[in-house]
Length: 219
Image 1 (cartoon, rainbow, N blue to C red):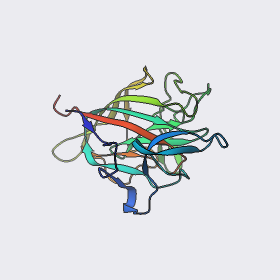
Image 2: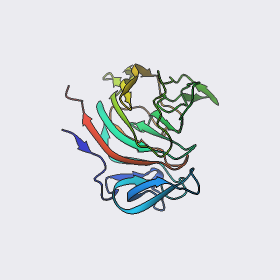
Image 3: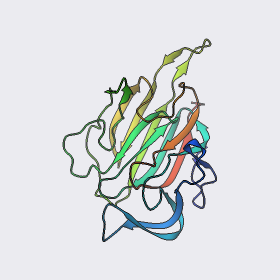
Image 4: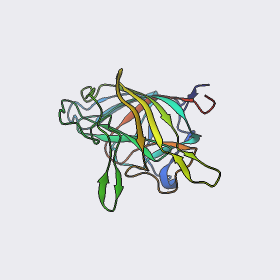
């Protein structure tokens, strides 16, 4: 059964990282680039879209629902130069960035599987196969099949988490990419079999809509 993680009207099914009650995430009906400043958004009241506020600098937001294996459809838009990310299980990030026109693709490019951060160094990470970025201000889509890590009865990990398939704006950009551990800026803590989906909120303006998750645990 598909789950609408965002009901279109409010953020009652979400919680701010750290329990911060003063976060800026809000629901709007329309969003566009600011004609005077393309690094910012303008919004109109309504329903159907949520974004991280007028400054684009607020806490991360995560679902109250905890997922394991799943298929996620999500739509996002960023203004010029902005940055966000989607953290499966609050641990494993697919990058969101204004990468329009970029040719030197890295794990930090939009669509990248972000690197881990160990001893003050970036470890691993996987760039997208192709840059499918749309210009700033245009809505984009991810369709992602994710497999949670596996553990034996003793609690030892037997299989890494895996991005089975990542489709970005209609093109496959990753297949069967294992993630050996949490990527940078993940919520601290041990890996597990179920945890929330988290959206990064402190790296610049971003908006989301149509966040639909299909659990795959029974397949």
